[in-house]
Structure formats: structure tokens, C-alpha cells
Length: 223
Image (cartoon, rainbow, N blue to C red; front, top):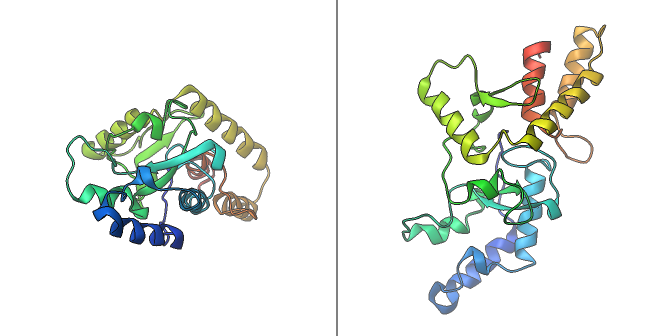
């Protein structure tokens, strides 16, 4: 999981919400009624905002391999008046991997209407997790605060972040990293390459499985 800094909602979404809220006394004011092109514009905006990686597992995503995810469930078991605004609140929207409702069996499609205790909107969310060379994600090993350990494990379980394909993807990302950091590099070269990998590239994309890569850089290269 990587921290996501939310931006301003697309104008097209704001215009549609204003119109829908006035029509039929709010009957059409619901995410399920959000049409294209506003919906597509929102999805593209979320993908760019996240650097083209999934909000939860951080694998590479595009328009046809992702869907709009609601961090706080848009269909909670017990509804109240604020839920209508919540389902159309851009700050509550993320882009998760998976274009079909039943694929893949992790991240947004596995989470469904459950709430998670560690959010990618938390600036320190990356500190809750650690990664192994085999691609497994677990609560941060040296965290002595049991409540935070439990929160991390609950989030991993609900999102299915130890799915086989995700572990394989992280392993491949780490293999790429080992190629980028051969023996003999100076400290300056290591720091320079680490900075390049952690930042957006020329296409404004982050390295797939960024958190695992960043964790590896900290643990083994001290950068």
C-alpha cells in the first residue's frame, strides 16, 4: 500500500452532481446513476492520481484493468443520510485493480462493503507493512504496538494482499531491482537510482509494487 494524496475532483463530476441533486429531489443522486463521460473521466483522474498503480496492491493498472473503488463502503449494512454524499465524494474514490466484478479475488473486489483499518489515504500507511523476498506482505516486523499490528493484518486479510499472483508480482519487481543495483555501486549511485525508482517516471507512472520495492531499498541499501 502506498500513500495517495488526493487532488481536486474533476469539474465534470462536480457539474453532474450539482444537476443530479436538483433533479427529482435527489432520486438520481447516486453513484450507480453516474453516467459516462463523467464516470470515465473520474476513473482516468484516479488512475493518474495514483501513478497508474492499484490503490491497494500497487500493481500496474489502466482503464481497462481497473474500476472505481470506494474506500468507505458506498453500500454499508446500515445506511444514513450521509451515505449519498459519501458514494459520490471524490475523496472517497480510488482506482483498484480488476475490471470485472469477480476478478481478481483481491483488493476492491474482495473488500466489497467491508471497512479496512489501514487506508492508502493515511500518510504513514506504508509503515504498517513489511515484505519478504518471496513477495509476502505482513505487518511491520518491528512494530511493538499491537493495535497497529492487528490493523495491518486485518487490512491484508480483507484485501487478500497475499494472493499468489500478487506475491509473484512483488518477487518479479524485486528481481528487477536487483538488476538495477549490481554490486560495486557507490553510495551516490545507489541514492540516485533509488530516487529515480521511487519517483514518477517520464509517463507519470510509479514502479509497479512500489511499496515492496521501497521496503527493499530501505532494508538492504539503507536509502
